[in-house]
Amino acid sequence: MSLHAMQNVLCRGVVDRAFLADLLATPEAALASYDLSADELAVFTTSSAGSLVDLAGAVEAWRRGELLPVRSLATAQARRLALAS
Image 1 (cartoon, helix red, strand yellow):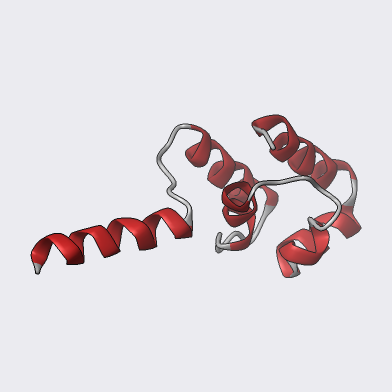
Image 2 (cartoon, rainbow, N blue to C red; image 1 turned 180 degrees about the vertical axis):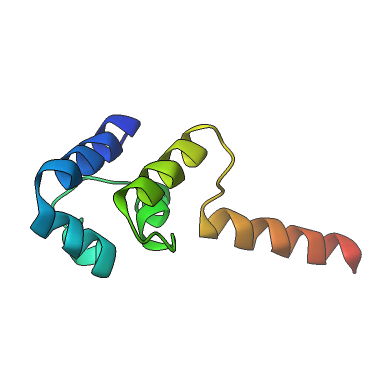
């Protein structure tokens, strides 16, 4: 949906410790009620974050274009392989 939705997730993690625990342990389940795109969801689900600070860093890296979603990485790798053959 947007950076705004991702920021809402992070803000909820600040004030709701149970949500944060769920977000870190089972992000797919914790984020089920949020309208996130596949790429936005991947920021939370593919991160090896162990804290809210780590998640915030992943969101910021994604915002700056420094963190490619898993799907984009797979596509880029497939392109390189196709060009190499």
